[in-house]
Image (cartoon, rainbow, N blue to C red; front, top):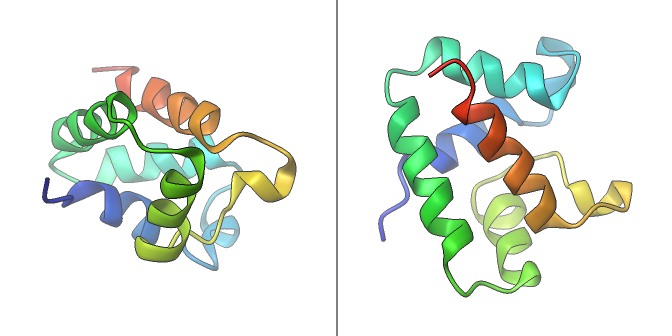
Length: 95
């Protein structure tokens, strides 16, 4: 699978200064939804990612290390998979 929109979402909207542009993760994801033309592709990519057999460690590596998200939910004591499901839920709203 070639990931196109997820790197844009996580690296482009949850970058090191994301909290200067948004007051919450939900707002950062909504900024992505407002500005990017391929939100549907991001939703599909995230569904595919979550339906795969990736371990939590692999999911974290993709989101943080590969795609460049500066927000790491595990540092807040959250499970990466649970958090990604929350992001997916935000992407599903207002469609």
